[in-house]
Length: 144
Ligand code: DQA
Image (cartoon, rainbow, N blue to C red):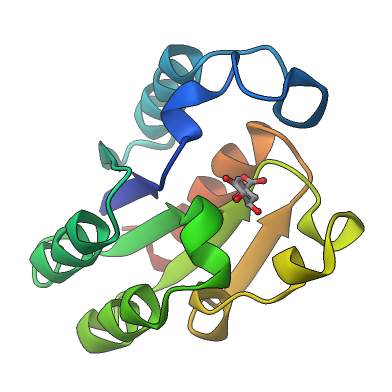
């Protein structure tokens, strides 16, 4: 099984940005956790991070026929991007949405998720652990 983990804008700044919300662990630590989780679950994993909406859309399109599952934290584009939603629907790869913070407990504008309208599961407020849970879910349901 091949899982693609996609992170949107400013996720590369975790550890620096708003540590009270996103914690003090860095993006490099998140990448290590994702890679270790892939190895532990016996699934191939690739990661992609971009601050640009179109690059996220292209990355999702290029996953077609290549990946069996997508873990996506579209970050701020969660709340605005019909293009990311449409790309997910276009490739129709099973996907799980992850948010480091509990978006439901924050500003009202964070309670709308376009990507979430496609994703079969959303994990929010579990910190980096949410990525692990999303990968475990996909591996269990679609692995082998
Ligand atoms: C986030 C929540 C979003 O509202 C925010 O714009 C982010 C990160 C999260 O992981 O908690 O950049 O997706």
